[in-house]
Image (cartoon, rainbow, N blue to C red):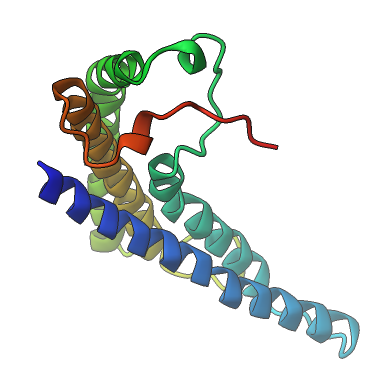
Amino acid sequence: MKAIVRLIEAITQSAGYLAALVVIPLAVATCYEVFARYLFGAPTIWAFELGYTLMGVHFLLGGALTLQRQSHVRIDLIYANLSPRGRAMIDLLLFGLLVIPCLYLLSERLVVYAMDAYTSGERSGNSAWNPPIWPFRAIIATSFILLLLQVVAECLKAIMTLSGSDPRPSAYAVVEERE
């Protein structure tokens, strides 16, 4: 079980670092658009659409890493006062009963959505650039699959905590206030 968790978390970390790198072309495209528009009076037809799709990619690919690092917003009123085993039990119940089924169904539909866009040659229709939309939809589907895998890893960590073989005791250590 520990090897599966390590593998999933390595994949999650790689996707998170890739998400961080997406900021570079986003910044370059935005700067190029600003200079082209205001210095040369020649706006591009692609910068706006590229900007919001890259921002979406950045946001979506970072979701699994955010979960891995327990950085999503949560209401700690009860959770923070529980023992590590209590937190593991709540995580296992909520992730197992609610999050995994929802993410599975959503991921399945998103894969079909991306494949349909690819086979039909669908384009964005949001600008004169009008790029194919399937790459972005494929990234959306991949991001949700990565999030699903990370939720599975979180469930496995909770099971290990409950069985006393947690690979990282800090996974359910005292939740600290973040500033």
